[in-house]
Image 1: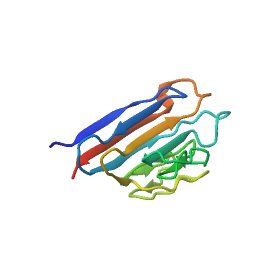
Image 2 (image 1 turned 90 degrees about the horizontal axis):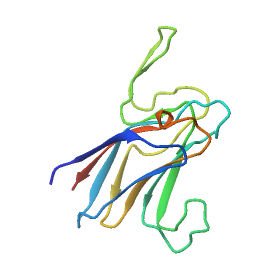
Image 3 (image 1 turned 120 degrees about the horizontal axis):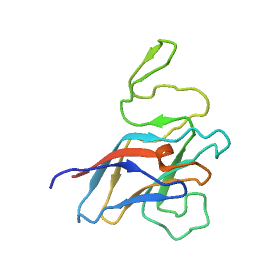
Image 4 (image 1 turned 30 degrees about the vertical axis):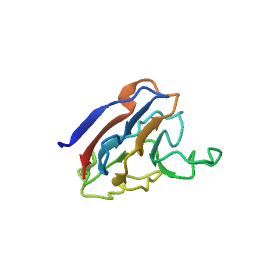
Length: 140
């Protein structure tokens, strides 16, 4: 089976979900997630979840068999991101620090059959251009 590439934008308050229905395992590689820059909006406008919804939906992640991390506004997150500033400073590579709040999470996750990978966004942003993504799903 071939890999699938997902690229797009999410409306504020929206969600994008991929569910593994391949019958086998899948690898998800996060190439790029952009978390917006609206000054008055939520500090962590993007939540990335993966796993299987569990039996305890009251906890912060939504279920015992899933996990999540959040991405702060003004942040670009992904595998092997390069960056530069307007002050002619250079940077590059994975785990580059971009200031302000920080994001910590895997750039590669693994899904068993029936697991999901989800990107959800906060309300209070002006448009979908504030939330952009690209990730790759590879059947194993």
